[in-house]
Amino acid sequence: MLRKVFAKIAGYKPDTRIQNLTLLLFFIEKSFSLLRGLIKLGSPKVFVDRHCIFKHRRLIHFKRILNIQHDVFIDALSLNGVHFGSHVSVGCFTRIECTGSLATLGEGFKCGNNCGLGTNCFYGAAGGIEIGNDVIIGNYVSFHSENHVFLDTEVPIRLQGTNHRGIKIGNNCWIGAKVTILDGVKIGNGCVVAAGAVVTKDFPDNVVIGGVPARIIKNRGSIWND
Image 1 (spheres, rainbow, N blue to C red):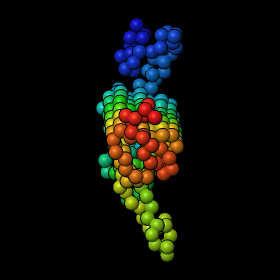
Image 2: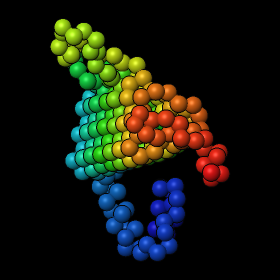
Image 3: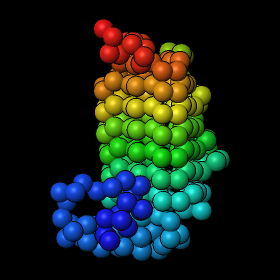
Image 4: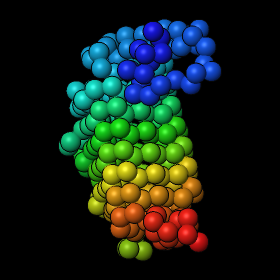
């Protein structure tokens, strides 16, 4: 019975080697998370673990089955707020900041359906971040949709303002651990970004990219033919 309920909620069957007691403890923990979601975000569709902080909660929107792990910080102050699709998981110690400075209101953050956002990630969404459906994001990944202007050598960089072009990630992408994605980048559908890459430019669909700065390593269709 527990396994059937788990499969219905999680969308997959638990390993047969996992004991029923472990599943029972999982349900108890999730019950408390569901209660926190109801208290903090006013919805029975959200699971919220311990020590999470949400600022400007009226600007946080979601469809159903949003799982927010412990110690997540979300500041949704922006023009468009924060939007999560269905069946999204936000890893622990993740930080989403939609406005870098009160001098300029940020654009906001949008994530599609069936996405897993890894732990210890940073999403600077001042210029706007848009993530497609079925995207996997590893741990310690950072998005920076804002860039400082620095052309004038006579004026301190901190006084020259910022550019905001935004970041867009296509559907069905896998972004590896410790990847850094900078402002203005568009990554196509079906892409794989190798761990540790620094992405500074656009890439087309279905390519594997990696390096500093990132470049195309190969097409996904040829990955096993080398």
